[in-house]
Structures are given as structure tokens and as C-alpha cells.
Image 1 (cartoon, helix red, strand yellow):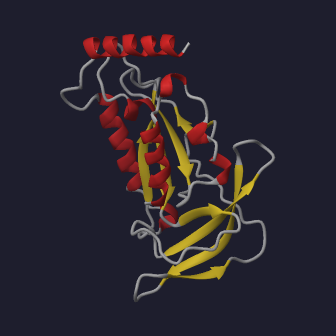
Image 2: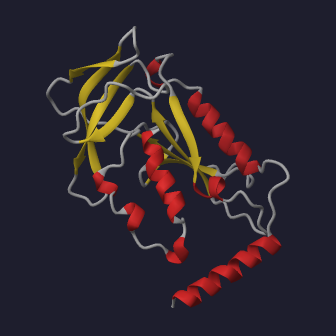
Image 3: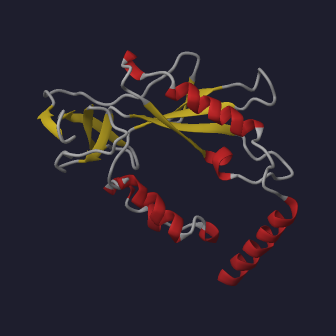
Length: 220
């Protein structure tokens, strides 16, 4: 069985190498994705000029950097997180230092298991305030109560799984629809996703080096 999978992988690789190429210039979907990220980054959350959205293009537009015979990008996926929010595993002590991208005031959410597999609650547990000297953060406990993280839903959008969906199919066939997913950055790999790096994958993609890089980048 392993030999058959290997043969199929070689056939597909050979086919792609002979029929696809690196695009000589940015594709329309690349330009639209960059525009979506720029619009998101240029609109500060909660009218706070120091707060920022930090966007990242994912999905087929980001993964397929080759130019196949047929368009393989069905939509544009943009994940974004606020530099004023941080998630951490339940029971972990709050950090005293954060990467430079974070705001001087940060809400820390504890990751709490939910009744649904692979879904969690994010409850505000601490408030971090950066010291003027030294750059370290002082921590105060957030007031008691049910203060949970809620995702941002922009006007003119619909729910599409965990994302908000903007349907552009009616406007122009060259303009792709957009999935925006509101995220919270976590500096350590959460236990709820512990099986993700080791679960079965067809044809060994992504490879172990890529998986290690994904997990390790959480700490950067």
C-alpha cells in the first residue's frame, strides 16, 4: 500500500512540474488577498489607534504559489488576531514578557474545554499592562464573571463555519469571495490540539519538518 501511495505521489508531482509554473507576476487572487489584509490592518479595533489587527492569508490562495491549468483558488481565507488579546492554557501563569507586536495593554484569555470536540471557550482571566521601563508586563486579575471572547462580525457578512463570509460571486467572476476568521494568538501549542501534529495524513503532506515549524512558530 505504501509503495502504491508513493507511486501516485511521484505521478502527481511529475504532472504538476510539467503543466504548472511559478506565476511571472502576482495573480488577481494574490492582489485581492493583499487588499483584504490591508483593509483589515488599516481599521483599528475599538477605535484604539494603538491597537491593531494582524492579518494572515491562508488556504488555497496562500498554498498554491504555482500557476496550474485551471484556477484552484475557490475563495480567499484571511485569519486575523488583535494585538490586544492573548490566549493561554488553563492554569498557566500569565507571561511577564510578550513579543513586540503586542499592545501595551493585553487581555489574557484562559483556554477552557467545551462540550464539543476541538472547540473551546476563551475566558478573560488577566489584564497585562506594560511597564514604561524595561518592557515587562504587570498582571492584575480580571473581575469575576462570565467574560468570554466573542468574534467580530462585520456588517454585510454571513456566518461560514467559524468565519464570516463575504459573497462576491455576484459582482465579478474575477473577484473571489472572502472568509474572515477572527483568532486569538497563543504563545504555546494548546493541549486541545495535541494530536494535530501526529494525526494520519494522506501522502505524508505536510511533511514533519513543516509540522514542526508550524508548532514552533507559536512561540515566536
